[in-house]
Image (cartoon, rainbow, N blue to C red):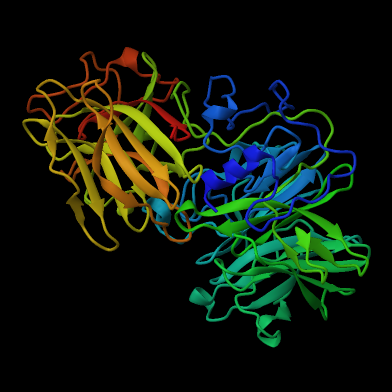
Length: 617
């Protein structure tokens, strides 16, 4: 069912959507989330709304999971927060997700109720080896992590399938996090998860990537040093999916202990159409018995699997998992979970046999106090001295790529000379974020300030294919362009470039995204309103990630490698023949040692703001 259809059903109060079932109210009921917003807890609301602005009205957000009446709708995170793992520490829940080649990596999200989430930081400011990830390495980098709290610290164990298993720690989940420490070097090691047992012994389970190791569909368990730095043995296969009828791609294990049983929650069957299994044994080394505890059933939620079991302070059990939605990425659902009389867990709606099916609407978890209706930030007025937590680069970032603009506020992206400027998939300095909903609009206002022919900047929807709209300097004029690139193909014009009037170098750009990830660019070059630019096009996923909604600026390779420096006295150059562009010192927030301007580069693009909202019709 489309998002529009789902909302129509919700408005009628039916409470059931496309095969899902609304279960009975949680004992005690949930506190409605329509209360007055407040700064909830010691970490505030950073990463939830536009920086420096009050909380947006519900109608201004492209997706809100909290229905405001004590219920929620899935997905609770309607964006590419893939391979989630979550824990509760005190009254708050924390969630981490895989990020692959994107930087910063390992986002940390926080929630008071498992429905309303805020990004509070990232555990990785760069990917290692640093030089290797200085260019986009699509499909590489940070795969499925595990998050735990032990001995007064937060621990994240994460895999890089080409380099091994790593660990970082922090006493505060906002950071700073420790430098990544290799726990087990090697190729094909993925999806690690630790367990500290009651007797002080520690263990780590992981899966295998066939693309690197030649094997998969099995889970290996190691003894681990209690400080999490070293594995103490060569490991033992404790579950072999090849021995289980119908099992393929067994991976993503999460290791728990409950009432004397060791549990491994693990998905199988593949990313798109898999299921969630639970395995249990009285010995951590097995043998394990298995049961499928969550599958699609007759719901529209394909492949509901790989995630985290959490328990609230009041004792309710819940399960977070992802659903692969192609260009939208792996969105996160929340399922009620209970323990059956036979001792097995079931997630969602029990079919009577112990196999659950996802719910789309349900009573919220029962938590203490009122919670603020939030969603991870998307819009940005660029009022801060740092980038908002919603933004990511395609590779390890160079501070010289960008600059905050103070008077008025805004963001300057340098038209960095690059030999791969003609293919945005290969460009590290694309500043992007996740698609935030099934339907939405994203709008920005920008100016291209350059004297270098071939420099260009704009708004992009980027995946294995891509399309962008923006401005390009063609030597004697600035033109409005819209270009597309098919998979493994070069860019082509989607429309004939349109020259701007002499002296103009600014435009407002918009992309509207509708169900099925069908996108339409539009532009306003004269203040008379937006007009469609090019034909509708489909967004496509990247390698293991959803499509990216991004901003970029780049220039042709000229041999210049300089970054950006400030301190000039002239305004941004908009014409002439010089390749040197200087940004006025008073127009740039330098932040002390942070000094940025466009010098010996292809100029700069200045973005005034970036606003995301629902489609009005």
